[in-house]
Image: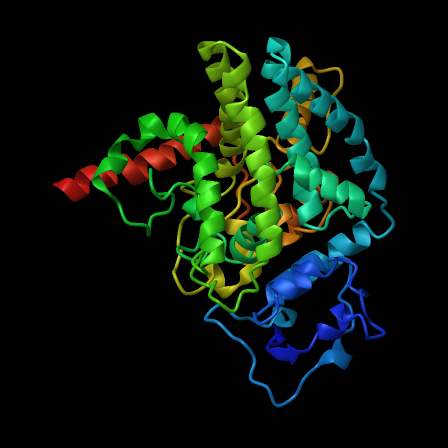
Length: 434
C-alpha cells in the first residue's frame, strides 16, 4: 500500500525503515505515517505541514493507481488555502512556542497530587481535580496528539498515560485526525458525530427517532454519563474496522498500543470506581466514583460540541462532497469561533477589562478550542498561536467571500447549540410521529 497526495502516489516506507538512510526523517514521528498508509493523505499532508511542504518527489511511484475517494482534491489548486497558508506562515516564521507548553508542567504535577489526595478521601481535591485535569488535558494532550507540540518521548508517554482515563491515543488519532479533521460534519465519515447517535441527532441529514424528542431535556445528564461508554465503543469499532465509512480493514489498527491503553484504563477504573467502595461508606464512595467522571464529561461536551453542531455550521451538508467543493472552505463554514479576543482594548473601560479576563478564561479552559476555524485549517499549529492568526484568516475569508462563523460569547454559542438540538430532535421527531 502507498500514500496518495494530490492525486500522485508516493512510497514513504523509507521514512520508517531502520535500514534506510531516511529512517525517522519525519519530524511528526512514524505513527502518523503508518496510519495514513493506503489512504488519500492529501488533506493531512497539507494542513499539518503549514510551515512549508517537504520535498517528497524522490518517493514518487509511477504506474500505480492512486487511492481516491469522492472527496479527493488537488490542494495545490486551492488558491484560497494557498493564500491563507502563505500569509500565516510569513506572519509566524520566527515564532518559538516551546515555553508556552512548558508552563503546564507544574499544573500537571499539582493535578496528580490532587488526584492522589482524592483517592485518600479529600473532598476539596475531589471538587478541584476534574477541573484542573480537564484544563491540563485540553492544553497539552490535544496539541501533543496533533503534533503541535513535540516534547521528549518520556514526557509524551506520561502525558498519554495521565490522560488515558478519558482518551486513548490510537482511537483518538483515528477518530479525530483521519475522520473528523478531514470529513467534518459529513454523515458516516465524521466519527465525532457518533458521540451522540444513541441519544440525539446532531446534523440535519441524520435520521430522527421517536425517543429523540426528549433529548433536549436529557442532553447534559445523558452526556455526562455516556461519554465514557461511547469512547470504549469507539475503540471496539476501530478494531473491527467500523469506526466510520472511510475506515475499513486496510487501516493499520495498532492492536498492541490499543491493548496497552485499555489496560491503563482498567487501572484508572479500579482506582476511580472500584477502590472507593472498599474504603469509604457507600454514599461517599458513590460520590467519589462518579463526580470526577461526570464533571470531566460535561466539560468535554460543553467545550467541544459547540464548535461544529449549530444551525450555522450544518447548512448545505452533503454525504459525498465538501461544501463549495473545497476542503478549505468546508472547514471554515462547518466550524465556529466564540469568545474571541478584540483586536484592541481600552484598558480604561471596565467592560473591556472584563471582556479580556472572560476571554482568557475560556481560552485556557477550552484549550483554545474557541478558535476552531483556525485549528481546523492548521491542526498542527500550537494552540497558543491560534488567537494571533484569527484576524488574518477572517480578512482572507472576507476577501474570498467565505462565511466566517463568529458566534459571539460562550453563553450565546451554548444557547445556539441547544436550540439547534431542539430544532433537530424535538420538532423533527414529533413531525415523524405525525
